[in-house]
Length: 216
Image (cartoon, rainbow, N blue to C red; front, top):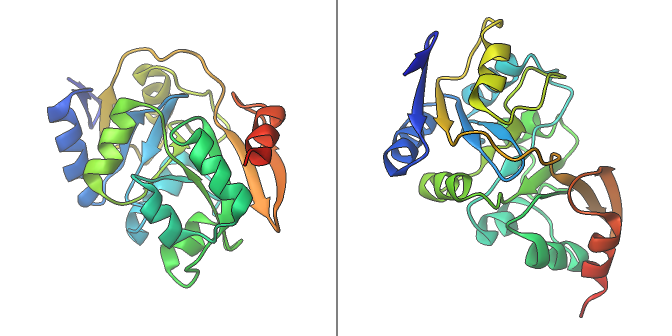
């Protein structure tokens, strides 16, 4: 099944395997998460990242977050402290994005994704398809919502497709997991100097986050 130039596959093993091939080829994939449909490209591919911004019509001055397959990659990617470690332990995988200082800043793709802020938002989605996809791929992929910048949050494939069809650039593959429950986009917190700042309210409350940090 196709929409315009785009291919739609089922959210199963074959669909995930095809999506991994697309990601390795520098292409863009729409995939389900525990909050909404996301738009994923290889976060370490400069050309793919640049194309992601063009697909969304997003300003390069705005950062894009990533999902990761495991905590080992988190440690390689970002500077961790005690509060952030507690949050990862408590809420990963889950609807929480943690913004941390980049460990490696001189790579062009990280400069682009961080909008040259020196920080990156990291998430691990509690969705079996998203988790299987990023684990099989083995590297971070982008986790921005599958919509035109400022557009409607997509909870179904068509929610995303009708927006992208109007643009010059479009995703290459859609993984269709049906209609997702209408959950708020992930809570985003910034962890800096052992201080927590909520950048976007979402499914997890400030109280839940504070309680997680207080635990021994």
